[in-house]
Image 1 (spheres, chains in turn cyan, red):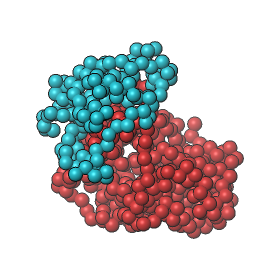
Image 2 (cartoon, each protein chain N blue to C red):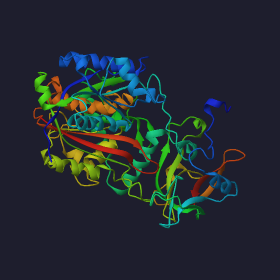
Image 3 (tube, chains in turn yellow, purple):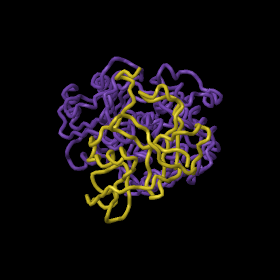
Image 4 (cartoon, chains in turn purple, blue):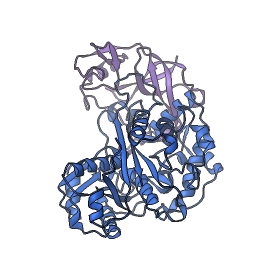
Length: 138
Length: 388
């Protein structure tokens, strides 16, 4: 069923910047994000420097996993590897820590999703080593 | 601040077609030969060359010099544009700088791409690790997020987006370079009922990849005269920004870089939006057209729907918009897309637009957009104002 061509893409850690702490914490069900120590702000996706200061003084810190839907889209024509899943919801979630993440919104019918609705972190296991963050209604 | 020392003194464009089996090189050759013939100049006179990085040749880091080799060009100034759909007008501006600085005298600014034949681009970076595992359907997915957020903050009328699609289709029917597939009129009913791609974004809000090439000739006003190039337009003002608001964690994503560069370019030209006679906004999606018009200042932020519905945006109207049909209705020739709207503006200003000719072509505003960022708006916004 899952031939190579249509397999769902699974994240490969450390392909962009050193992201191992993110995926290691994800294995334990904990969501970490980069935190700029100097400006005291989070950022996501992980960057090689702070987007606020340009410094590399970044730490991985846990976030609450609580947030609201900033925007969402209901995918009707699937990306490769998602053929059996339509319709599926992709949302930009704004966390309490004032940082946004683009995720799948699970456990809700597409027509029930509302911008501004509270959501919480959940996980989707994509492989033995990859536990991917997703969100669901709070 | 307005300068009238540089001119666009010629243009060319190939027909657009799907899965031609051709390469960016071959399409570029057709655009070059056509440009030389229409301008009546010799290849040896070309001493500057700029080209947009195409999707179809993306893995080749030596694309620009090898393209020159394929075309038999020996430029003394060479530029590869990596700003996606913003590359062509950005390259016109860079050519102007090079000409003013004495690097070259006569530059060809080109786009050529064949993504419907060969899609070779890989955006790489963080996407495979942090974005693609969601199954987001590329740019339509990202624009779906943008469109939905816009709709939650502002009054979005579907029939306004539909009017953009319908008007551009009407224009495309008069453009001989339009894709075969789009050579039939479009009704509001067909628009509304077109397939949802990434809700609330419809298929007919979007572009379709095709193959094609386009080019313009950039030189000094003085040299154009010497060469006997009589038809010219002046790129009098230009502004660009990359990564607007990228150092904010939670920006208002409905604000794009056009809110900065639109008013700035108008100021450089000594104009207000009311002075603009026609607009050729980069149109990868209908919502991009609406947001671009708002943020340049044609109407207030969030007032785009009523502005579109209350304005005659046809080639006969008060603000003719994408009179060639734009990418939405002609087809998007990959990253040669940035030249499509520019070439139409120049063609109109040369008085060569045939049955869709706009009456008052004393100026035109052209825009570009390049790539869309993670959880934000598009990355590059640029504006060029042309004067007759």
